[in-house]
Image (tube, rainbow, N blue to C red; front, top):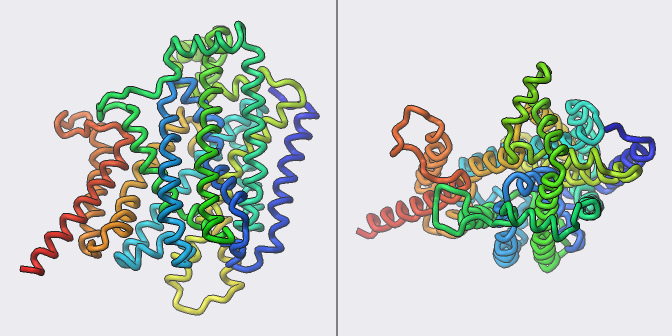
Length: 519
């Protein structure tokens, strides 16, 4: 598909407007405080929509739709845990961070357990955000490649450059206000695509729902107590732990708490963001199910989609017969991420493609800019200011923030380029965050809840948690390892078991220590 002039004008106009809009805030971001906290003067509704925008990444537009297309609604259960975690965030985390006045989410770790805990948390956070920037950039580029025919490497480079540019200039205020605009554009684009799919569906909406039901596309997963599968209970626990991480010590969210003009507005932001995500997430899962039904009713399009995915898996295109053989071997799950882009490349009317591409770009931009700004803040507060012996001027701080934004933008773009050829974006994203977050979440809960746990106990508990993560992640991959030594747990259980293991180990060691002291 090649964009027509009208579509190209719409798309380019949107990108230019967003970049200029974000850059406009450069006049307000001349100090490090303004760059990181926007002066603490933003309304709660804007901060809340910005929180929502960070969840609605291109992983939602491509990966979530792809999962619903390729499997079922099991991953939707993750969204059900968000309001619960949001309530905990409003009640405990917002007052805690607002009262402390610390812009860094990890300053508390040093106060509780020493420098090593803060350093570990910062290191893990930067790795997680690098993975996030890369997967989101790659996801949006995958969709844009299908819609435009442009080279995916060039799309990744251009996307990374533009987002880094306006984030570098405008700071957190640019991030939040552009997130507001982009969240609206994304939602409008998604609703329009859903309307197009239903409008063009043979037999109408009822037939599409019937087909999806017959293939169990609306299933939330098994309600059994199996630890080997991605059951309803496994995913909701995973969602609760991951969303607690997000509201409890994710730097990008903690930073947003400080941008709100009052405690009440900060709490309102969490309430709005966590409440809106549930119905909007539902829309994207429904789009995936309806797309599945549409392709079932158009087997020729399903074959074309498989052929496209198969051809994209080769660095150098082989003979047609080889591609066809590869296409026939692909399952529905393996082609899910390409379903939405493929449909859009074939069915969007003239003049609308530009708007939809803008919506997909909005999804990526509203997430990546957040990660870039929070990483820059962490690098300044937790690294540069902490380890530099000489005094740091305000000019040095703002220059460092912009340099750090540029550094993370370049690094994230390079990582996205390395992801070309990965089959399932969402699966990769969940695996990376599950592995990296286990130790962080356990350490945070120990510091926040278990007041009697001190440095030595926390360090031993962290090592114990990391060993659990290593065992659960890599033991199933070792072919010669006896079955009884391999982890029987589903991948999503990594963060749950490692966090609980760390917490229990820390509490147990603290009790043993206190008992010996009393004796």
